[in-house]
Amino acid sequence: MSLFKKLRDLLYEPRLKGIDPDSDELLVAHSRILFEKPMMRNVFAEFYDLCIHLDESYFSGEGKRVEIGAGVSFFKKNHPQILTTDIKQASNLDMVVDALNMPFENGSVRAIYGINCFHHFPDPGKFFKELERVLTKGGGCILIDPYYGWVAKRFYSRIFESEGFDMTQKTWTNDSLGYMNGANQALSYIVFERDKEKLETLYPDLEIIIKKPLNNYLRYLLSGGLNFRQILPSFTSPLIRLAEFLLTPLNRILALHHIIVIRKK
Image (cartoon, rainbow, N blue to C red; front, side, top):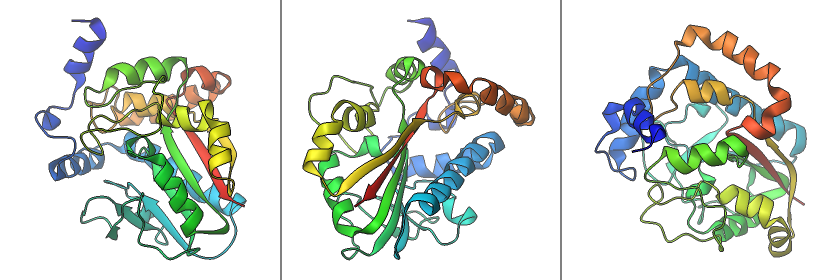
């Protein structure tokens, strides 16, 4: 057994052991864990605020603002105008929505936000067709997903037994066992970086206007995320955030997430 696997098993959140990643039980456990972790909640709050800032800076038009794949999200608590949705029903969500077959009228959505959900889509092409259909002109989609830098691709290829990180996957589709089990965390690299020209050719109404790594990776990692024990106490967050700021020039090497902003022409 490798040293990394031993460390991973040691830090794995014991309340998650034996839970099927595609079960409703996982959402309940994740909700409790998130509530207990101020450091992790601050990271997610920054994700939410960034989504709103980019929406207001780059999108136009009227319509709904929808979070997809929300899970245990508290996006709506910070920004009440958001419609929070997921493929599964949960008490913190407004409605059930399949991102590949959305129940919204044509041109009725201004913004769609997806945090750590894109790589779970079994057929991204259907998602892009839905974006072209439901988004108003000038509206768009903001995605935050696993990055593909030097640290990220080594981290994600080892951290989860139920998900992989395969940058060589030939197609966009994934015949996985469920939305969580078998997901490829390198999917956003494949679609938005490796196959960018293909994306632009197949979906000419959509344009990528921003694609960059994020720099809150130290707090995300040291908080343990939703699946691992927290390594440092939450009161150290200001110091960790300072370290992230000082390391900003190394984002492309150290980042764990990147953000993609897509706008409908």
